[in-house]
Length: 113
Figure 1 (cartoon, rainbow, N blue to C red):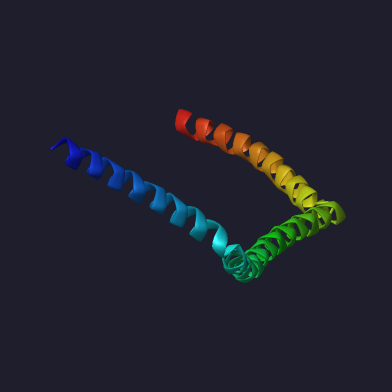
Figure 2 (figure 1 turned 30 degrees about the vertical axis):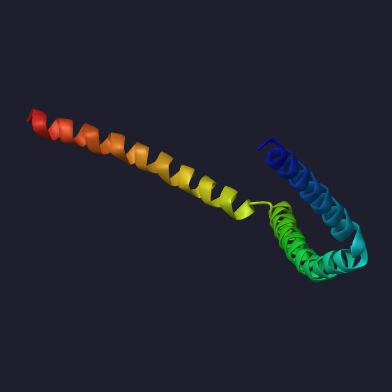
């Protein structure tokens, strides 16, 4: 029985050494093929990533240009028409307030009688 255990241990040891030799051999045997596969994958993925990044950067540039154009439009436009409209509205409101006081006084006189 002891001989059988010894033979089994030796057999397992030989199998482990053989597996280690095959693992090292296959790891170092074809590095160029693995490198070429990685390079081909990188070559196909990089242009797609670059195109996506270029599109994103172009969208950001267009957004910034649109914002700059809007600010330039606001700088060129002095808002004079808005100021003029607010002045005319203020003048009309002051006239209405005066007429409102006259109407109130007339209503009070009428209701007192």
